[in-house]
Image 1 (spheres, rainbow, N blue to C red):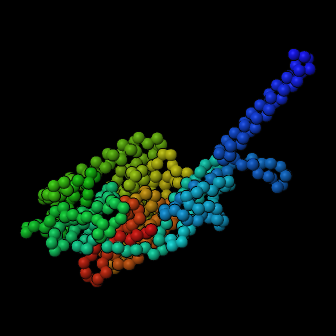
Image 2: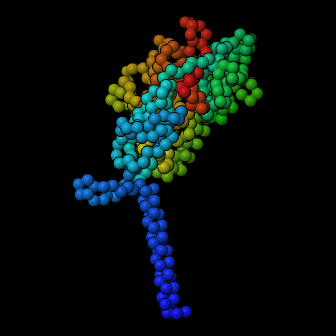
Image 3: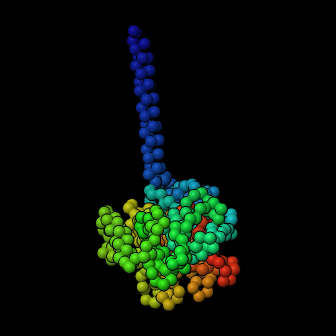
Length: 398
C-alpha cells in the first residue's frame, strides 16, 4: 500500500471514529435529557438574566368516575380524564374537573417536586335516578361488612320475616336482584317486627333484636334461628375478633403510631373503611364535634394527609350518620332529624372534607344510607305514600 493510500485509510478510520464518538455523545445527551425530564426537571429561560434555568417540577394525574371529563388547572383547560398534566410548578393549585350532566368537582391540591399527585374525582349526576330495590316492604336495613349484602325486616304478606338481598352484580334493581327470606315468621315468633340486625364479621350469622328485646342468633347457612341470652357476649366476641385483626395490622405498621390514635382505632366507636386502612372517629372541640379520618396507608398517596377533618357539627345539633363509600376515600353522609321529620339529606363527601355533593334530599325512613359495591348507587329507605309501606330504593349517582 502506497503512503498516499495509507494516509487516506487512516483519515477514513479517523472520520469513522469521530462519527461514532459524535453518535455516542448524542445518545448520551438524549438519554440524559430523558432522564432529567422523567425525573421532573425542566429547562426554562430566565427573563431577568436571559440565561437558562433548570427547574424541578411536578405532575398531576387526573382521573374521574365516570371518565371523559375536562380538567382545569388554575382556571385553564389542560387535559381530559384520564390524563396527566406535566410541567407544574410545585405548590398549591386549584384543580377543577367538569363533565356535562354532573356536579362540578374542585379541590385545592399540593404539587411536589419530581412527584405525581394522583387525583380521582367521583362525579355525582345532577339528576340522580331513583329506582325501587324492593317491593315487599323493608325496615331497619343493615349492610354486611363487605358491603355485598343487605339484611332487613319485611312484613311481606307471603313470607314475612328477615330478608337478605345481594348487592353484587352489574346492575341493582327490583327485577335484577334476588332477595331471599332467611327466616320466616312463625305462629310463635314474629321476626318481621324486629328492631335491629347486626352482622357477624364473617357474614355467616345475624344477631337480631326483636320488638320485645329478645335476641335471636340467625344462621344464614341453614336458615335457622335460636333464642340467646348471651347477646352481649356474642357482640363482644365479634368485636374482639375485629379488634384482634386491626391490632395486628397496627402493630405491623412501619410507622410510629401515637397511643391516642391506637386507642381510638381499637375502640368500639371507630368506623373502619372497606379497605381496612382508615377509620372514622369523632373528637369534641369546644361546643363542636369534629368528624375525623385517620389514614394508615404506607406509603401515603401523594397529596393525602394522615389525618383529616371531614366536617364539624354543633354538639347540640342533630348529628349526621356516616357510612363508608366503597372506594374508602369518600363517605356517605345522612343529615337531618330523620326520626322526627321523616326527611333528610344524603350526600357524598371526600375524607378531607372537600366536594360535598348532595345525592338525595327528601323523604327518609331510616337514618343511614349505603354505598353499592360498584359505587354507582346509594341505597336508602323511603316511601312515596304518607304512612305507607317503606322500601329500599337505589339512587343512581352516575
